[in-house]
Length: 260
View (cartoon, rainbow, N blue to C red):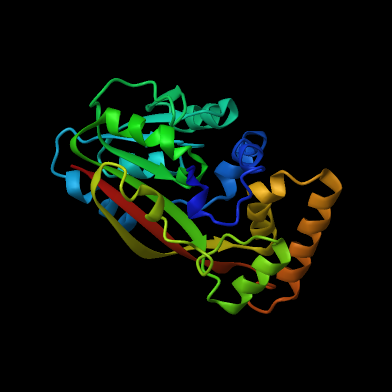
């Protein structure tokens, strides 16, 4: 079973294409995607926060959205990312971080080297049958694996409308419990928590954010342009988003699994 079970809408046949689609837009991803609330990161690290030094692997680190937050929490961070363009962006933005090419299925680190493995917006792309044994291998005894996802809160009517216009089915109301893929895989306990979050956007920057989503990145150019024009038109005609800055409501879902 791969990680797509957490995002039940992803067609397994398109999963590899969508998973590898972000690198060409690494700069836009770094600029437009939201970070993670401090409360969610603290909760994810909770079982091991007393360790000194606190050694954390940011797996599938992308452009470093989660990496920066981990540094602010005092962790010693190693980042691993498979996409060269995303990795270059991370290295340029956070030159102090050891950042390595690698995948969740073949982690380029020794046994027992991490107190925690954190995964931001990426666990659903992993082949968990191969990745979980690798994650367990690099975790120290009593270590924690935590996945975090920023989900647009489509309980808010205008956000639900945006989801329909953009063709995205990844949102808070459609979310399947992300803990399900980790149950029964060698972890002592699996827990889930939710944290309120938000991002300041304009119609232009919100359209740019939608453009970084994998279902948009993998469209043919003409279809992508048409979709983004519809998104921009919707945002400019909706009272909550038509005039200057607005807040995109987000729910950050966090799942942590403790190694026995």
